[in-house]
Image (cartoon, rainbow over all chains, first blue to last red; front, side, top):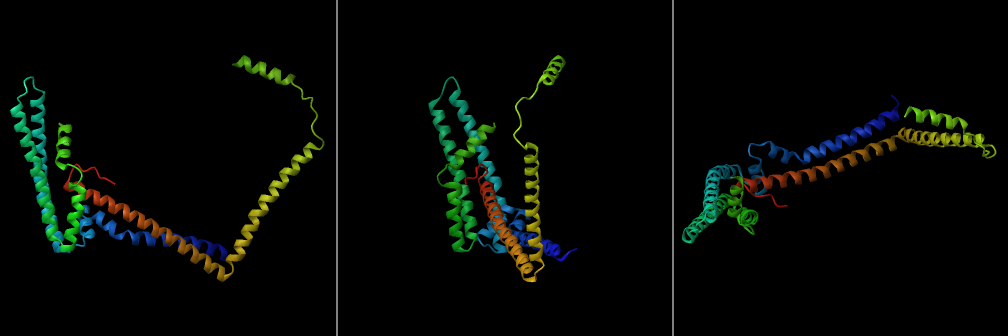
Length: 160
Length: 107
């Protein structure tokens, strides 16, 4: 093979090697997170700079929180179904509807309280500065400017 | 269809071109074809000859390999940053969905 051809190929090889090297090095951390057992929690660990002990504690809290959240969502959905049946029945009992509305409202508040308590517990496992940042962020994502429980309930009613 | 073809063939056979061609028409056509061939071949050859002569010079060869290495690395780094940010956003949404299962993932 002629020398210019070798140089030509060497240049192309260098470009490919440079691309692959930098790409794989630059995405190493994210690829490791995606391969982990709970990628979203791995992201939390990285984002809020958590140590291993803090991370394990938060993962435990996360696992404990999920079934309670689901149970409350189902109770809100059931309450909304009852309410719909009462409102669409031929003889609407205003007092009974009022009571049911109050029960549904109480459940939504309980759901939000449960959610907020979880956020608070998680934030307490973090270093103080990160904990504050987490609370601020998660509040913006899950509680602020939208009614979480209402959405849960609507979703459940739609799926029934 | 078949009848139409026969009729068309008959019509074409009857057709006679009466308009005279411009003077030296054939010669002009061949001249233009030759010119196009010569121009394109010479351009490719010139570029190839120049590139091979340049690559034979050690300083140019080194600069060429370095430039491609830098170019490849830069594109790789840019793509890596973009992809990493995309994956992180995706994981962030997944976390919010896990604590708020009906979260629709606002941008």
